[in-house]
Image (cartoon, rainbow, N blue to C red; front, side, top):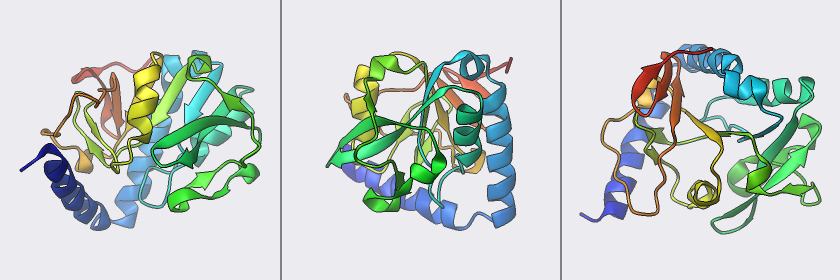
Length: 195
């Protein structure tokens, strides 16, 4: 089996697991993950934050996006501009988001673009990951391209019940230093203190 086939097989397994999660667990885990993220000193000290806009199958990031804006920080969200290509676009109000590529909430095409090196702290999604920060996305390569250029603080959000120990990786897959679940923060696979 090729790495691509392994990844597709793991995605299918995790999507089935995700579909079976109870609404109560989804809500409770999302709240705990958000609370922990907002307490991270790296988040609190950041002036410019890049964060995905969660879909129904992901962590609900609206509380993060709202906190970034209400704290006076600069907020960037992804805009898919071509297959595998996303740009970091600044928004000043969540009402600027509307369903775009794959139904993901996106900013308008005329929202200001920011370069990766302008970001102080990035919050990324995944289908699954392990505590070491090896992530499995949807296969489009959007975040791998971002991670190939970005060197700032980065955290992956994942529900603990969707964590997998074995993630198939390829040379272009970049690990993320922090993984945040409802149980806590992991730095390079080791439980880390928050604040």
